[in-house]
Length: 225
Image (cartoon, rainbow, N blue to C red; front, side):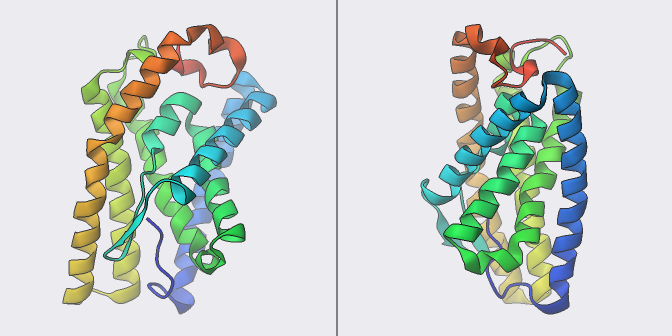
């Protein structure tokens, strides 16, 4: 889902830095809540796991340029369900930063836009989860329909933000609109995969419930709210 170099240029890049700063402040709020809930060490461990996963998603998993961006298998809702919102957000931001610093320095000017594109849909997933998952339901008991709703919210949010940046950078000319539509239709195919991945990972977590108190997972994974 990278915003390609040259898609947004000049002063318009400031918009990405502004939205990323706002997302960063909200991430700090979530981080503080996570520290109060399980402690700093748990948050750091989960963020490190998320960072390693995100780096794998970007650099090792297959990814293909399509339209205005690239199609990646970014399991945002999976990270949220297993690790929690704050570790997932930190992992997305840090994994993206590691990739930019060491493997794709040409992406660094777009970092603000890219991190916004990853984090804001994650926050939407958190809000949706609070609404559609009963307080007495641990995440390991999630149904397919709920996993699908969370995945659709995340992937749809990514597509919406990529479209926004493309329109900001290139306007509403026909070629740009076609490229956006091509990317969006290809990227939403991830929705066919992610809910199944969520349920598979949740089933594994349920089988490994003896590790629930280890601090390596979000408390909500095995416990009611």
